[in-house]
Image 1 (spheres, helix red, strand yellow):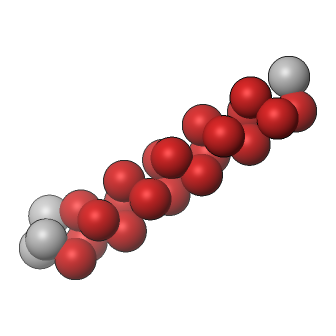
Image 2 (image 1 turned 120 degrees about the vertical axis):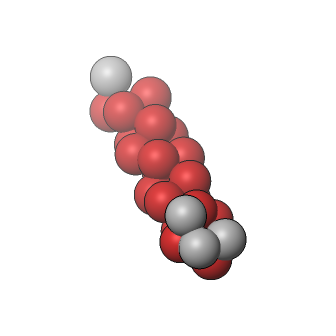
Length: 24
């Protein structure tokens, strides 16, 4: 559960960062 949850969190943060840089 630990590694899988961390992976999802990292992907979610990357999505937010990319969206912010795109003006999303």
